[in-house]
Length: 131
Image (cartoon, rainbow, N blue to C red; front, top):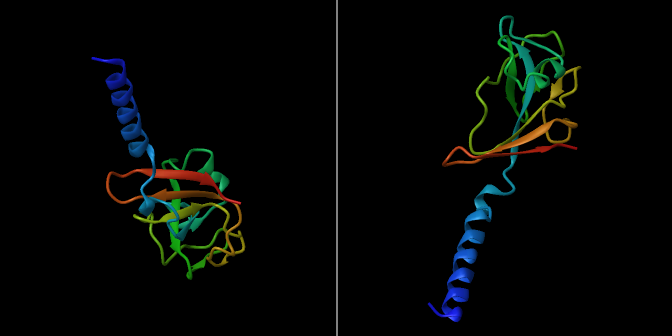
């Protein structure tokens, strides 16, 4: 194989590799639609976020409970309702950062927390720290 063909083939393979690594435009800028609050699964009552953050949300009796934006989050110690323990699909959600006094969940009322984007298809997700 000549040097020119090798260089051309290498460039073509590298270009394909870059295309595979580039994010699909549908995966970027997913709207955040839910906020997760930490909940004791035995009592269905809200706990401080730290009870779920330290164990990655996998403590056997604690877990993230996802409340849609526009719904009300309970104060710490109060029962949860209007949401689900199942993470929303095909969107972004934030875990933590909902005021401990409760109130309406929205992009303006959630401060901090960790944002996760759940993409459709092969189950990929991306994570970032909220601000």
